Image (cartoon, rainbow, N blue to C red; front, side, top):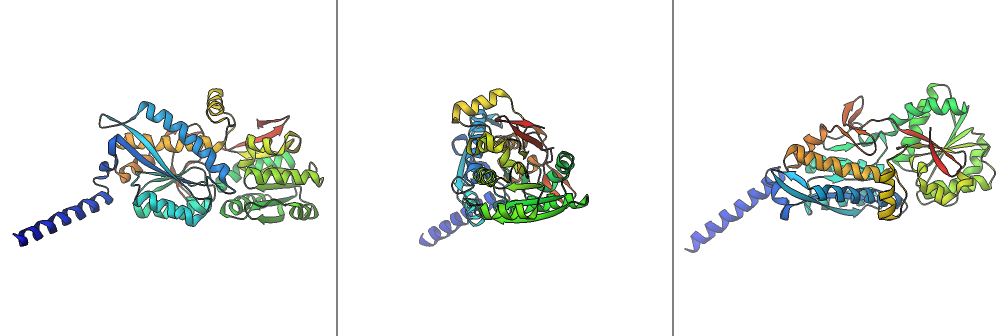
Length: 385
């Protein structure tokens, strides 16, 4: 009898091991939706110098959760709700990697959204392939995020390499610059931004006057701005978070550099937070790359009423990222992450941010491409150009 019990115990353990292996091979993932709740992971910077990005992204995710769970996710005739488990990456690649490992191995999600910082996105994209879980970055901009790309990782927004060719002719026509300066955050995003525009301007014979990189969280830009003045740049691209951008513009104004030298901001500098932090007089007459021009008034009101916040592109991207996951679950009629990934690949959806369709072209894989906006700050408001 003891021998029989040992054999029975061994058989039960073998069956348990096979069931776990089957789960991670894709089969049986449906068992992860306990109590008709589907888990989706989210990694982003909710604290630290880049907290603006994760904070706004989380607002968009919460709005999407309200809409999705009110209607339910229809799977096999049964309505499910989505639960988002989120972890703070602090815009640090090592922490983002730790987050995704926890999300995949412990939380057993069917998809991952995030991160917001390009260095983090580049670190977690290979993990999505490793764990065979689809991931959608909310906003990472560096070309390398989807170039050469990963089968399980997707980006909705255009990369800097796709934005620069579209906006360079407009900027050249506006200012006819001879010398261009770059004051950028020292990470993959800042360097990708600068390189993309440098490449485009060089094609039309316009050189880089100066290229300066600063660390996240920098507050004193006086020395950098004096270097820019000495380099006699006609226009300057400034790239970073909104608090960094506001400080740059304030100090440029104090030094009397503006409005003589024209400042053009990265996407973050197209948001109302820049106006709130820097003031209308400081931002007056400056331009910015933008990821949205206008949104329906009822959406702006909803954001204001629920969060007492202004519209921000990360809100739009957070909303759309989770909505794409929900649509893919319904399209695949499965909780198998591999099947959900296949459904994401054929997404064709008019989102809040624009038309979302993931394509493989040129050097890019699973890349969205819609035309960016360009805005002017004038009389206390953002005016799409």
